[in-house]
Amino acid sequence: MIGASKIKQYSNVLEKPLSKGKQEVSLSAFAFLFSELVQYNQTQVDNIAELERRYGVILLLQTMFLGPWAAGSEIVHNQLCRLEDAGYAVGARCLELLCHREKGNRRETRLLGILSFVHSTVWKVLFGKVADSLEKGTEHEDEYMISEKELLVNRFISIPKDMGTFNCGAFVAGIVRGVLDSAGFPAVVTAHFVPMEGQQRPRTTILIKFAEEVLRREARLG
Amino acid sequence: MAAIYNLYIINKSGGLIFYKDYGSAGRMDTNDSLRVASLWHSMHAISQQLSPVLGCAGIDLLEADNFDLHCFQSLTGTKFFVVCEPGTLHMENLLKYMYELYTDYVLKNPFYEMEMPIRCELFEISLSQAIQKDRVALLGR
Image (cartoon, rainbow over all chains, first blue to last red; front, side, top):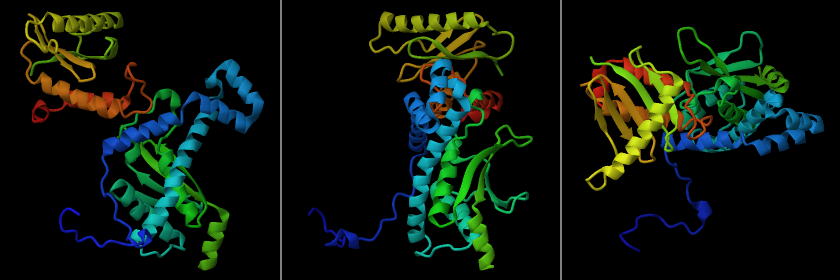
């Protein structure tokens, strides 16, 4: 071997310690990759096949004769679903990795615990900073909101006017859902734009709505 | 400080993808701006052939009585040019900065189709901010 190697050679690859991984990744590289992911979700053929699978022949015929925009909101809904699913896969893996690396294999059993885990640890590792704020919903007991002035994934993206409700933050919502689901806190997570007075760009809010069983368990645990 | 009349971005085939004017002096209607864009694209290409110097990359600066035209061509053939008052300084830096904004807010936007007219809100906002803010800050780049 070239050079005096001080690296301990492990006979079994399973005994090698997990590496810390790269701490920093090029933002531009990620932005281009994410842009491709969003575009991939928008391809025409997938939409029609997806529509057919989910909603049957009637919607398919409607789309064929009137054009894809007749089924407008369905397509947006489908794209959001797929983007969220992509995020879900990331979230599930993130939870495993971070529990091992950051928290010494302890797992959160309380609601506030897992929420602050998502709000600080997950955000710090994925986006380099903790989320701007974590709030409890005032209207419903089961709603919590993580707010961010501008999501990293949305930094370079301008949504065209005719796709008003589409938010690429659905990817981040998927990540949060993946983490919560794998930790045993099933929830419905969505991303919303919240316009702010005096600011040109709206804030993004990730709305987390926990399932009934989570609240019941939380109440039982006191 | 001297003023900018208008800004153009043309794609590699000569089609106008972005046009912005500042003030009424440089205002042109859509058809005229399209014509100017394709005219400039052809002139730029012809100048590369006419040049007595080998390896000429095209026209960088056109000086006329009432205006200057600065042009920046990226490696991909996209051209950014600005028409301004004669003697305006540091337009090359502005064009390079505009190119950076283009790569950030247009090329990283999943809803933008290549070679199509630019309809990206973020690009327009950052461009206006760059033009309006203090020139000194821009020149430091």
